[in-house]
Amino acid sequence: MTDEGIQLANAIAWPRRGGLWRRLFASLIDYLVIFVALYSLVAALFLLTDGGVKGSFWLNWKTCQSASLNGTVDPLFSRYDWQVCATSFFGFPVARWAAGTSTDPQSKAVSTLSIDLDSNGKFRPAALDLGFLQVLVLATYLLVMEGAFSRSLGKGILALFVHDELDWHREGLALQKAVRRQVVKFLGYLPATLVGAFFAFETWKTVPAPVLNYSRLEIVIAFTASALAFLWPCWIALAIAFGNEPIHDRAAGTTVRVLETDQ
Image 1 (cartoon, rainbow, N blue to C red):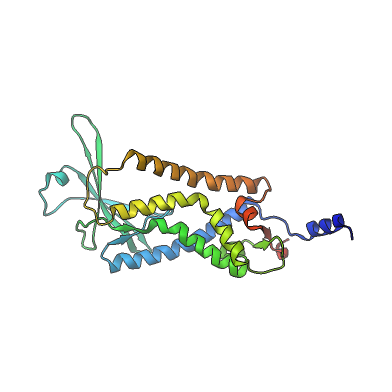
Image 2 (image 1 turned 180 degrees about the horizontal axis):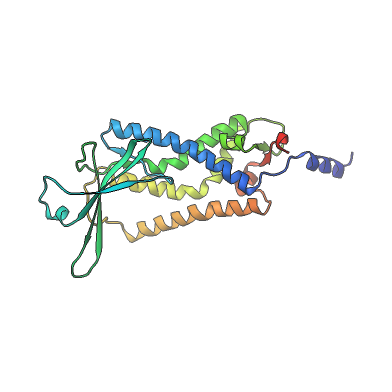
């Protein structure tokens, strides 16, 4: 058989590519798996540390109710209208805080103040927010699952398989390929993760203040990191939508295909 014949046979043998929507729903399932695991961990740490650890993730919901201050005459706090807010996971709290708003009678400028609460509803120093861990945990989960089985739970449900382009019958990616794939895939989120970790540790155990003293450089860096975290997955999605391999698959020498039994 000629080289052209071999290439044609290989092209015919390859399963069809996983489309954008199939891969998107698979990613959503994987994120929900990590979401449940992280919230379970943070809920346990919140209880063990009396509110000293909290979590703010991409998917979250909160409930707030009006409240009043008891036992303080500090004018800094008394000029605010207060609400007590909480985020919970199946009834277990993962964050609890008091949110205050105040309007200056002359300038009409609105200032806000947020103070973390302990389990008894009392003010406490700022808790450590573990929200920055979600990308790291998600990347680690995908690295382990694709390295061992060539698919995550989401990909398995949606009948997707990550193939090594040089050995497409192999189940499980080589460690080097699996690591390269996840590093490049989440590279656009790295600045936002680092910024999130920086702000989490900078505010940890600090006392509340009406104005956070962030420098202009910090604000620019945070905005740039957020923009990159938004544009990176959009670039990946566009590549998939146009039928091309996204950058992380090209860098790792992998391709995501529909399982043969699904064709």
